[in-house]
Image 1 (spheres, rainbow, N blue to C red):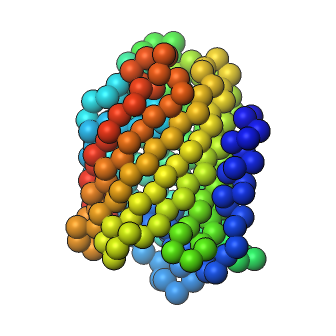
Image 2: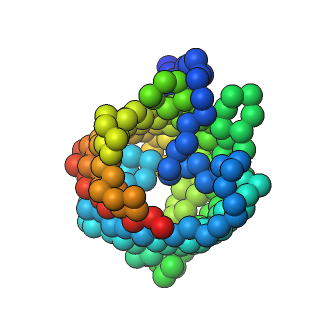
Image 3: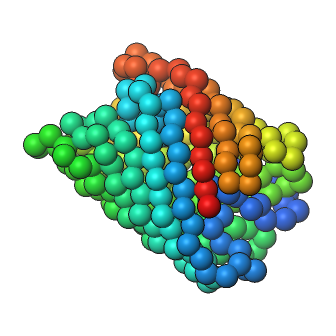
Length: 236
């Protein structure tokens, strides 16, 4: 693991805290919220995951249905369009638990992913484990994320992603954020990825996002190149 990056991630997460952050793309749990269903759908000009493109720079669509329990447990089913290993659709089943303790918010989950119609000989299924720690300091929230798969999709074997994110409100509807992460893989490239951008709440249910993505592995192909990505998310 890249030691300077990991140190920066830890420091960015454990800054002085005033209150727990409520994180729209993570915080499914609220102690005052009853059990409920939630739904998300959207589209973007490029499907970027961990800094790299999963659609080779082409547009994609996605959707999710999720059950959120008052206890903080949740389960969901998702799909997204991709262009990898001969597959055009990746599906995922996930279960997890969100909880708050010692002034922090935690999110831990396990998921199973499938690439539908993948080429023969390609590994079309994988388990992935994720752990988030979130803290809020004033108007800014920080998140540290660790993801690990013991045997990744395609030809990749063990893979680990460590990421830190800072996010803050510019106005009532506009938020800015920046993310820095490091991916290390067996039988795959190791690289650092980052993004920075703005998310605008058009309505209570619709967000628009404009984000610049980059990695230090541009020489590996267009999937790792710099890109300006626009996307829309509808949640209800």
